Structures are given as C-alpha cells and as structure tokens.
Image 1 (tube, rainbow, N blue to C red):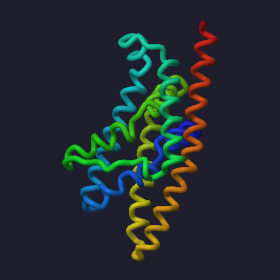
Image 2: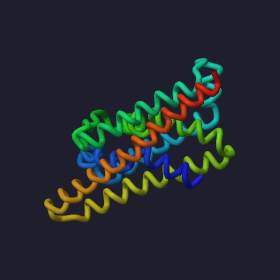
Image 3: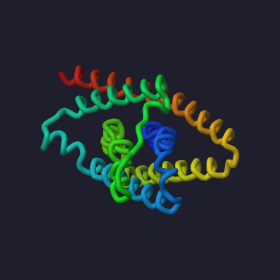
Amino acid sequence: MIAAIFSFLVMLNPFALFLYLKPVMNDLSDSDFRAVFLKASLISFFIYLAFLLFGDVVFQKVFRINFESFRIFGGIVLFSFAYIFIVQGKKAFIQIKGDLHDLASEIALPFMVGAGTISLTILMSEQMELWQGALSLALIMLANFIIIMGLKQIRRGMRSKSVQTAFDKNMELLLRINGFFLGAIGVDMVVTGISNLMAAS
C-alpha cells in the first residue's frame, strides 16, 4: 500500500504541478487558489474512485479493449512526459487560461488525471481491497494538496526575488529528477504490458 502511494505520487508529480500552477497562483488570491485546487483535487479523486470501482469492467465490457494495451499506452505517455520534464523542464508547461469556475476542471484534466494515473488506479483495484484502494487514493490526494500548498507558503515567505528564483530553480531540478523515476515507471508499464500479452497468447 505504501509502495502504491509512493508510485502514484511520483506519477502525479506535485513538483511539476507546482511549477505549472505558478501563473495561476500569481493571478488568484490565496483563498481563491486554495478553493480551486481543492475542487480540482476532489474532481480527480472521484474520477480515480470511478476507475477503481469500474475501470476494468469499462475496458473489457464497454470498450472491449485489452487492459494491457492501455497499460502499454499509458507507459508510452509517461515516458514521453518524463523525457519532456528531463530535457525541457519548466519550459514544457503552458499557462492555464480560463474563468475561475473552469480552472478546477482544467487543472484536474489532464494534469492531475492522465493515462498513467488511471492505469495505476486500475492496477490498485486488482492488487488491493476496495477500502484499501479508496483510502490510498484519499491519502494520495491529501498528500499532493499539502505538498502544493506547503511549497506555495514556503515560496511566499521568501521576500527576496533572488531567493525566490533560486527556489524555483531547485523545484525545476526536483522536477527533472522526478522525470527519471517517472520514465522508469513508464518503461516498466510497457515491458509488463508486452510480457502479459505474450503470456496470454
């Protein structure tokens, strides 16, 4: 359970999300940003919960897609994101534009909910009891929320512009390091998916 939470947080990548959300943080008051990010976290949690409950059924019964194919696709997407994080860093991100009411859904999709996190959610449904999966998802979203808000408060407490710049550079360094872990998870998903397909054939 702890390993699943750690892997999910690496995949969710709060450091990347923090850097991505900086323009939004600058445009919104603290209370507005907190409300928007909390709403985005809740939207993401309920999407994950839906896939935890019905994900495998949706793939096999509704879309008639082999889950291993989705696992491979998710791994390729994760590897692509990891490559962008490592090579381009902060330059990989674009600013979110939209009304305050739309920001939560724009943050949740596709930046908090993606192919990789959905794949991991479905894997959690196969490896854990339902209550364990739901509890893990709740802890993951809570940890992500605390990390983002904590980083925001730390940066806000820095009065000097040069110190804030150094902080941003360190966050970008963590983003790049996180990219290596993310890439490894992506490659592992691809290898596992191919191995499972070959074993089933």
